[in-house]
Length: 200
Image (cartoon, rainbow, N blue to C red; front, side, top):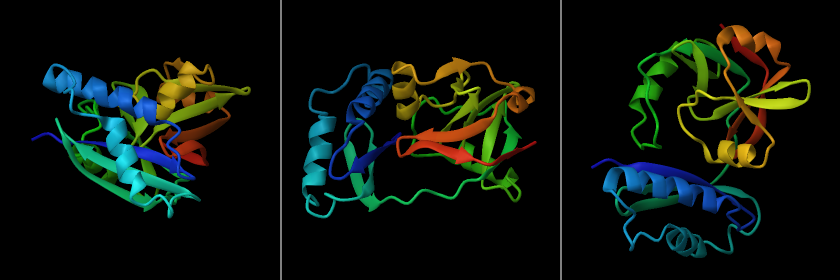
């Protein structure tokens, strides 16, 4: 059985990005199971799960990790503390595929052994920049924000920022990195987390 995950931000008891997660869940179900199952009520499941700990989550930032296939499997709610990611190592892998948010991350995790003394990897596929091991990446140039058009996973935060016109897609190769002033990580839990260095 193939399992998928959604990592949902819970901020002061609210789930501000729940609709973006719902869209990705629906796309996943449509691809693997022809059409979403009518009984698969994602938002109700999330709301019911959070209701169990309503008093504890009214203040602060939490991550709700939902595991599912054609049905819900589990949910886990934990306080969220961002990883300290300051240095990225460029790692090449032309065979890497991660179009859906699978629970099994073996292909990506196997590349982490190449990060050396860096905190995470930045994956290069077929000569272009894609994602880190757990986030999309955004580059800043002259106050404008760009994200690689060659992503591995269509992240929910990435989709939101593109829809709102805050970032634009651009072909970005390793040789282009020096053209940008800054780099940031984004995912469902991170809003433009700054990176200090990218090693080649």
